Length: 229
Image (cartoon, rainbow, N blue to C red; front, side, top):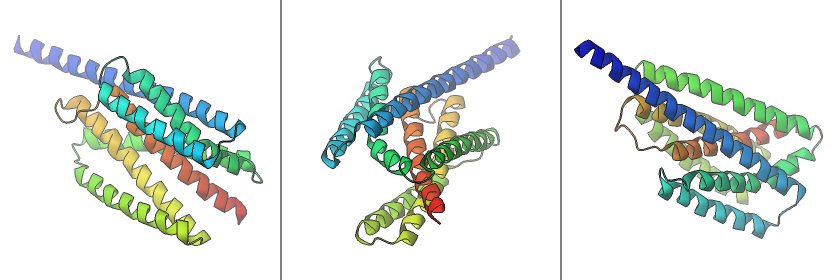
């Protein structure tokens, strides 16, 4: 009887984990769809710098709404709005690269590389969870790297050097590739260890969407720099 109970419990946990993972991936797909739509809109309808800032602030409000909504039905519409607004803020950057020589190839290469990085990160995260590898310390190093990236980015505003811009882009790719692995690991760990995290599917999707969006933008810069050489 005890064995049957344990088996049923294991199956229930596996089913719950699959459900959580499936919900999260569907919401990531929704975010990417809305983000692509938002980017396409601002590629066609050019926004001023002030308008782009306004869209970014509205996106921050949507992010807060996703966090506050938790598991309520409001979380999904808020996530869709957030995805669209964040995509819209990246539209001017995408438009800039699309008008470069071989621009469509640059954007396509960045998108495909982002997808490949996501698949590789998922594999690494699942391996880490299966082998009980703790990546908590990895998150601390990533945060330090993120602060360094912010510092280099601010420096790049005042010092316009191609080498510095390429360094920032390369560092950004490394950091957000690492965050993809780390955040996927956190999600997987929460699936199989109740109480190990407080992600909801919407917040998990929001986190992964931001990782993917930032990685895509930095890859765009690297492929654009490579095409100029």
